[in-house]
Length: 306
Ligand code: MTE
Image (cartoon, rainbow, N blue to C red; front, side, top):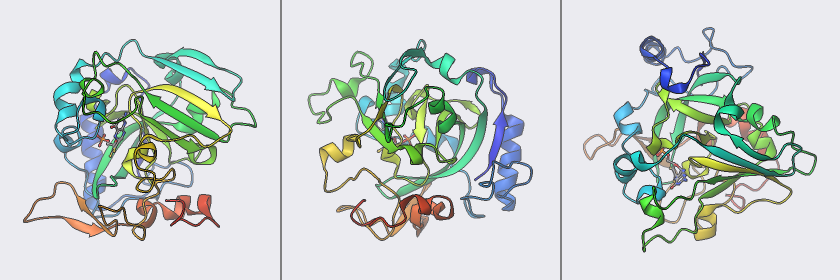
C-alpha cells in the first residue's frame, strides 16, 4: 500500500499530475514500500512490483452499481443523473452524536490520503486503484459510538428519479443497497472512505461523493454513495447476502480456498484482460493483506464465515 496526504481542498480542486507521475514511477520501479509515504506500521502493506495501476478509463467505465443498471457500462452512461451536492448523511444507533449531517461537515478537517489498493471483485476480476481516502476510523469516531456498537451498517441513497436501476421492473434488489462491517474491521487502518481516485473527485459511477473501501474483502462490501451510517449491536444484513445467502456471506474476505458457486476464487483476471492476454494470476488470501488483517479472524472458520 502507498499512502500520501492529499491537500485538504474540495476534491474538485485536486490537481494531481505531479502526484500521479510520481506514483506511477513508484509502482513501475517496484518501490512500493515506504519512501516517506508511510502510514503507521502499514507502509509496506499490499502491493507487489507487478501491480501496475489499472488505467483510469477502465476503473471509471467497468463498474458495478446496480442502481444505474446491471451492465458494466451502465453506471458510466447513467450516473451523471445523480445529484451529489447537497448530500446529507443520517447517523443513527449506538452513538452519542446522531442525526443528519452534511457530507462536507463530516469530512471537513480530516486528512485525505492517496491509497493504492488492489481491488478484487467476487466475479474474479481485479484492478489496482489509486483512491483518495479518509480513515474510516477517524470518520466514525466523530460520532462517539458507545460500548454497544459492535457493528456499523452503511446504506446507499434511494432516489429512483435519478437512479434508473431502482425503477427497473427487473430489479430484484430490495433497495437501499446495504452493507456492514464489524467495528474492529471498520477501525482497521486499511479501511477508508474513498472521496476520489486518480487524484480527482470521485466520479458518480464509482460512488460519489463517498464510498467504502475495505481492500481485503470482495468489492461488493464497498457500498457506494452512502447516506446512512448506523451503529448496531447485532450483525447487519447485507444486500447480496439477502439475495443469495448461500453464495454471499457477511464477511466476504478474499479467499482463494473458498469458491463461489459460479466463480472459482483460486485465480483472478487482472484488468485489462483479454482472450489473448487474460492476465490471470493467483488470488492471494485476504487479497494480499493477510499480514495486516488475518489476526482479526483468528480462531474463526473462514469456510463457514465466508
Ligand atoms: N454499491 C451500490 N450501492 N450498488 C452496487 O451495485 N456494487 C458493489 C460495490 N458497491 C454496488 C455497490 C460491487 S459488486 C462491486 S464489485 C463494487 O461496488 C464495484 O466498484 P467499482 O464500480 O468502483 O469498481
